[in-house]
Length: 211
Image (cartoon, rainbow, N blue to C red):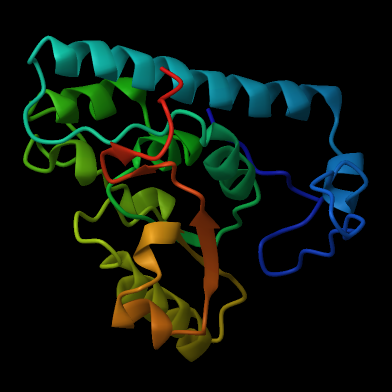
């Protein structure tokens, strides 16, 4: 289950301390300093749920129980977990086809997600979306999109809607580094981009996979 660090910060008002140049140690950031032991454990549980879900998905895919493509989130669990834990009422999430981790991080259930992989009507998209099209509008999670960079203009629309309505929030648009070339990315500068170094660029690895 994902959780909101209420009383700590939110996506639209983050004042994290910057680490020293050349390091990636964010332990001194305000948001991390204020985490309780229970909050740290909950973040860890969310990451473990993502990892176990993906490992089980791989076995089902290899057994030919799942049709279409399967893009797992192994190795990137901390990204979705950390970002989504900060979500407030008016914060939104949209991503590409590697969407399992985000779905679990916003609080979607494993059963509805696995059912979607199996093409069942009890899936989050009624079994018609599969691995790449998880959605949960009630959690402000807008997919799950199969076109490289296709979520960028949609994320821009989410951000513009917040601005138009005068709401204080953010539209987190997740994409891999391979999606920065399409024009849709280069023409947009209105929202928060979460760009990941996706070693598996779609399905081709630049290094041996960890699983």
